Length: 153
Image (tube, rainbow, N blue to C red; front, side, top):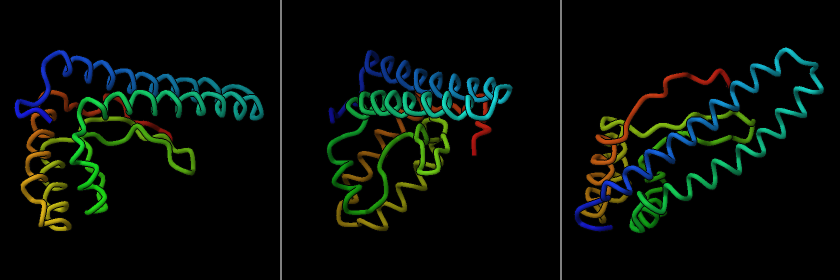
Protein backbone atom coordinates (compact mmCIF):
# COMPACT_ATOMS: atom_id res chain seq x y z
CA UNK A 1 0.00 0.00 0.00
CA UNK A 2 1.60 3.30 -1.00
CA UNK A 3 2.20 5.68 1.87
CA UNK A 4 0.15 8.38 0.15
CA UNK A 5 -2.86 6.13 -0.42
CA UNK A 6 -4.88 6.02 -3.63
CA UNK A 7 -4.49 8.55 -6.43
CA UNK A 8 -7.44 10.44 -7.85
CA UNK A 9 -7.67 8.17 -10.92
CA UNK A 10 -8.09 5.13 -8.66
CA UNK A 11 -10.61 7.05 -6.52
CA UNK A 12 -12.62 7.76 -9.64
CA UNK A 13 -12.48 4.08 -10.59
CA UNK A 14 -13.66 3.06 -7.10
CA UNK A 15 -16.53 5.52 -7.33
CA UNK A 16 -17.54 4.17 -10.75
CA UNK A 17 -17.35 0.55 -9.55
CA UNK A 18 -19.39 1.21 -6.42
CA UNK A 19 -21.98 3.11 -8.49
CA UNK A 20 -22.09 0.09 -10.83
CA UNK A 21 -22.83 -2.31 -7.96
CA UNK A 22 -25.51 0.03 -6.64
CA UNK A 23 -27.12 0.19 -10.09
CA UNK A 24 -27.01 -3.62 -10.49
CA UNK A 25 -28.83 -4.02 -7.19
CA UNK A 26 -31.38 -1.31 -8.00
CA UNK A 27 -32.13 -2.93 -11.36
CA UNK A 28 -32.62 -6.24 -9.61
CA UNK A 29 -35.05 -4.65 -7.15
CA UNK A 30 -36.98 -2.98 -9.98
CA UNK A 31 -37.19 -6.33 -11.78
CA UNK A 32 -38.49 -7.96 -8.61
CA UNK A 33 -41.17 -5.28 -8.29
CA UNK A 34 -42.18 -5.73 -11.95
CA UNK A 35 -42.35 -9.48 -11.55
CA UNK A 36 -44.77 -9.14 -8.66
CA UNK A 37 -47.38 -8.47 -11.34
CA UNK A 38 -46.77 -11.72 -13.25
CA UNK A 39 -47.55 -15.35 -12.50
CA UNK A 40 -45.68 -17.00 -9.65
CA UNK A 41 -43.81 -19.55 -11.80
CA UNK A 42 -42.63 -16.88 -14.24
CA UNK A 43 -41.58 -14.72 -11.30
CA UNK A 44 -39.48 -17.48 -9.81
CA UNK A 45 -37.78 -18.37 -13.09
CA UNK A 46 -36.99 -14.78 -14.07
CA UNK A 47 -35.91 -13.75 -10.61
CA UNK A 48 -33.66 -16.80 -10.26
CA UNK A 49 -31.96 -16.03 -13.57
CA UNK A 50 -31.46 -12.38 -12.59
CA UNK A 51 -30.13 -13.43 -9.19
CA UNK A 52 -27.50 -15.68 -10.79
CA UNK A 53 -26.38 -12.84 -13.07
CA UNK A 54 -26.33 -10.42 -10.14
CA UNK A 55 -24.10 -12.77 -8.09
CA UNK A 56 -21.59 -12.97 -10.94
CA UNK A 57 -21.65 -9.20 -11.55
CA UNK A 58 -21.21 -8.37 -7.88
CA UNK A 59 -18.31 -10.81 -7.58
CA UNK A 60 -16.52 -9.33 -10.60
CA UNK A 61 -16.94 -5.72 -9.52
CA UNK A 62 -16.02 -6.41 -5.88
CA UNK A 63 -12.81 -8.14 -6.96
CA UNK A 64 -11.87 -5.03 -8.98
CA UNK A 65 -12.66 -2.79 -6.00
CA UNK A 66 -10.64 -5.07 -3.69
CA UNK A 67 -7.60 -4.88 -6.00
CA UNK A 68 -7.52 -1.11 -5.61
CA UNK A 69 -8.52 -0.51 -2.00
CA UNK A 70 -7.71 -3.57 0.12
CA UNK A 71 -4.06 -3.83 1.11
CA UNK A 72 -2.39 -7.25 1.30
CA UNK A 73 -1.94 -6.80 5.07
CA UNK A 74 -5.71 -6.65 5.49
CA UNK A 75 -6.09 -10.30 4.48
CA UNK A 76 -3.58 -11.48 7.08
CA UNK A 77 -5.19 -9.33 9.78
CA UNK A 78 -8.60 -10.70 8.79
CA UNK A 79 -7.25 -14.23 9.21
CA UNK A 80 -5.84 -13.42 12.66
CA UNK A 81 -8.86 -11.50 13.96
CA UNK A 82 -11.67 -13.36 12.20
CA UNK A 83 -13.24 -10.00 11.34
CA UNK A 84 -13.58 -8.89 7.69
CA UNK A 85 -11.22 -5.94 7.10
CA UNK A 86 -12.87 -4.13 4.19
CA UNK A 87 -13.98 -0.50 3.77
CA UNK A 88 -17.46 -1.33 2.48
CA UNK A 89 -20.51 -3.28 3.50
CA UNK A 90 -23.16 -5.18 1.60
CA UNK A 91 -23.16 -6.06 -2.09
CA UNK A 92 -23.75 -9.63 -1.11
CA UNK A 93 -26.35 -12.33 -1.41
CA UNK A 94 -26.73 -14.64 1.57
CA UNK A 95 -27.71 -18.30 1.61
CA UNK A 96 -31.41 -17.35 1.75
CA UNK A 97 -30.94 -15.22 -1.40
CA UNK A 98 -31.40 -11.95 0.48
CA UNK A 99 -29.68 -9.12 -1.39
CA UNK A 100 -27.70 -6.67 0.72
CA UNK A 101 -27.14 -3.21 -0.72
CA UNK A 102 -23.64 -1.81 -1.16
CA UNK A 103 -22.25 1.19 0.69
CA UNK A 104 -18.91 2.48 1.91
CA UNK A 105 -18.57 2.27 5.68
CA UNK A 106 -18.89 5.49 7.63
CA UNK A 107 -16.02 6.83 9.72
CA UNK A 108 -17.88 5.88 12.88
CA UNK A 109 -18.34 2.27 11.75
CA UNK A 110 -14.68 2.05 10.69
CA UNK A 111 -13.51 3.38 14.07
CA UNK A 112 -15.68 0.86 15.92
CA UNK A 113 -14.48 -1.95 13.69
CA UNK A 114 -10.85 -0.90 14.14
CA UNK A 115 -11.22 -1.13 17.92
CA UNK A 116 -12.74 -4.61 17.66
CA UNK A 117 -9.95 -5.80 15.33
CA UNK A 118 -7.22 -4.37 17.59
CA UNK A 119 -8.83 -6.13 20.54
CA UNK A 120 -8.67 -9.47 18.68
CA UNK A 121 -5.16 -8.91 17.25
CA UNK A 122 -3.25 -6.48 19.51
CA UNK A 123 0.15 -7.72 18.34
CA UNK A 124 -0.40 -6.10 14.89
CA UNK A 125 -1.95 -2.88 16.14
CA UNK A 126 0.33 -0.65 14.05
CA UNK A 127 -0.67 -2.42 10.82
CA UNK A 128 -4.34 -2.32 11.80
CA UNK A 129 -4.18 1.41 12.50
CA UNK A 130 -2.39 2.02 9.18
CA UNK A 131 -5.06 0.10 7.24
CA UNK A 132 -7.95 1.78 9.03
CA UNK A 133 -6.42 5.24 8.59
CA UNK A 134 -6.29 4.44 4.88
CA UNK A 135 -9.93 3.28 4.99
CA UNK A 136 -10.95 6.45 6.85
CA UNK A 137 -9.46 8.50 4.01
CA UNK A 138 -11.48 6.45 1.53
CA UNK A 139 -14.58 6.87 3.66
CA UNK A 140 -14.31 10.63 3.68
CA UNK A 141 -14.16 10.63 -0.11
CA UNK A 142 -16.58 7.83 -0.99
CA UNK A 143 -19.06 7.28 1.86
CA UNK A 144 -22.69 7.74 1.01
CA UNK A 145 -25.82 6.16 2.37
CA UNK A 146 -27.88 4.15 -0.10
CA UNK A 147 -30.62 6.37 -1.51
CA UNK A 148 -33.10 3.54 -1.52
CA UNK A 149 -33.43 0.76 1.01
CA UNK A 150 -33.92 -2.70 -0.33
CA UNK A 151 -37.26 -4.29 0.31
CA UNK A 152 -35.65 -7.71 -0.06
CA UNK A 153 -35.36 -9.34 3.33
